[in-house]
Amino acid sequence: MLFRRISSVAIVATLLVGACGSDSSLDTERAESTTSTADTPSEATTTAPSETTTSLPPSGPVAVADAADPTSLAARIVAAERTTRSPDTSDAEVRAAAFTLQQSYRQLGRLPEWDEAVLAETPDDLRSAVTANAEARRQFRGMHSKLSDTLPAWRIVEPPPADELLSYYREAEATFGVPWEVLAAVNLVETGMGRIRGTSVAGAQGPMQFIPATWDAFGDGGDINDFHDAIMGAARYLAHNGGGSGDLDTALWNYNHSDRYVAGVKHYASVMTEDPAAFNGFYHWQIVYLSTSGDVWLPVGFEQLERIAVTDYIAANPGHHLGTSTA
Image 1 (cartoon, rainbow, N blue to C red):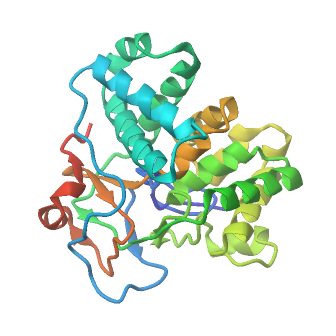
Image 2: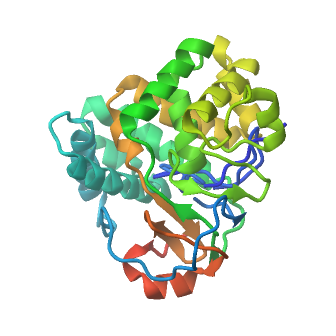
């Protein structure tokens, strides 16, 4: 029985076969992935777009250049973490800081030799979060043995409100015993908390990326594309495999047959367990796709009927190219 991720990413978007059947991992990591996050190829969108889009207007947060040194990167991470976790910042400020944070962790993930210096500049209360985010990024990146020179046939949309999603995670935890933070992390990695609309190469569908046969067994008659039903179905499936009684390793491995996936999801979940306010940052992570040309941001409004060459998309949308490193 398999789930495979599309992406994170997100933030959160990326690529093996698991309980659902997606190809990603919030790059958004799908979701690379994310993220999280989107590094995983997908062949068809769930809802066909009306036309192929190659150029998008500026939208939402903006890309940032890589930090020049560990001290600068640490300062950027700390400032963004404080902003995303503060109850006194506006939604626009949180959204911008979250994207900066996501890009910063992607950079740190590529530079393990910077870990010691970055952590030396990080306040005690954020060190475990910085470590967990960097390690999650490395685990999901490690799932990619081959990168693509094309972008997937996806449609990127706004997710449901954060409070709505959080209420579904908490309801599922109360019903099945699976920690809400784990469900949020899975949702982040699979589809950037619902930003990715598409069907994976393994046939997985919906915000939690279920293969239809698995959904028939664990969806309880619900709608595979409905957020409430999908989150409850994921909790039901994880609980069936031990997640409700504390065996999260087995439960997550059955969701996606990869030890790296298990470790990455648990790292993201641990950040929210330590400080639930960290959910606000993860919620605003964008869909970032790791390609042969490096990281490419797929913002809300991205809509492709067929796969498109990465170089063509970057030429039309240079502001969405986040870097050339594929490490």
